[in-house]
Amino acid sequence: MKEPSDEPLSLPTMPPPLERSSWLWYAIFCLLCWGPYAIFSKLGSNEIPALSMQFLFTLGGVPIALSVLFARRLRMEPSLRGIFYSLVVGMLSAIGSTALFAAYRTGANTVVVTVVTGLYPMVTVILAVCFLRERLTKRQYLGLAFAVVAFVLFSI
Amino acid sequence: MSAWVLFTIIVLVAWGVVGIFQKLATNHVSPESTLFWMIIGFLLLEPFLYPGKILFTYRPRALTFGLLSGFLSNLGAWGLFTALRRGGKASIVVPIVSLYPVIVIACAPFILHEALTMKEALGATCALLSVVLLS
Image 1 (cartoon, chains in turn blue, orange):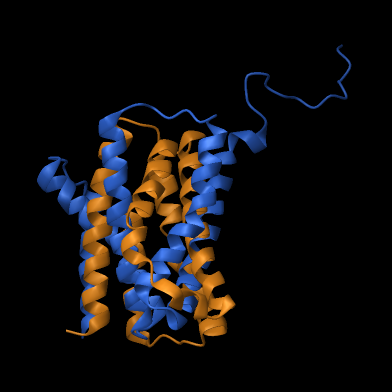
Image 2 (cartoon, chains in turn red, blue; image 1 turned 45 degrees about the vertical axis):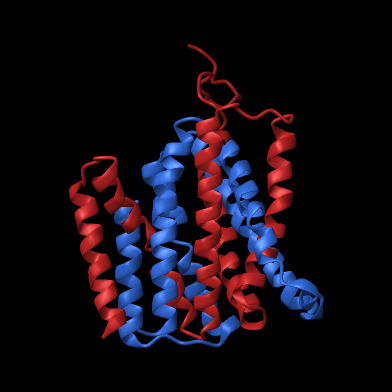
């Protein structure tokens, strides 16, 4: 009869548990950054006009851009289309976040503003149907229905 | 229409269109490159936003809030892209990160001294369900 080994059973083809679920930790990390981001945005907007908040917001993002650049050893894909679309993403994001700071500055309830602006995937889904000819799943239809109920509740 | 509603609509439209361009961008370059060029896109608008000397008259804590807002937003975006690159499915990762308003809901009474009415709480719940289902 074979002696039981002291070594724990492991499947050599599987990565270690921490690595296997590392994506989850990064997702939670994102969540833990974006929650305080909204709170700091509100606290800053109480004291600084929206345009100046956006100016500071951009400066705050520069260390991240530099980290990405150096992590990739100064190499970026030379796709003009990709760069153009990404620049548009940046400029439109900036317009959106300036409006967010302005909304916070009005003194409206922070949770309501945060939750309603967090509904932007609804607009993306609708635009994707119109312009990218994507089809809605049943789940997304249900999501849109909940968004409509939320808007009605906030507006009455 | 109240001012906050108007600003909120601008956010929804701008960020909604961003979602489309993000999809188009990542068809051509990696998410990290998109993040890098996105921040360059922010920088392109800086000359129009620079408030002048008045910037230095704001309280240091207010300036810190503004800088932290940008730092954490972009750091979070890096976390999201890394989660996707490390094998997280977008259908799971995106709904998780879109729950960030829950942190605001949890902290608002203590940090911002704001409370929600029953109607607002119900609306927030519907909105969170919606965003999880949509993403």
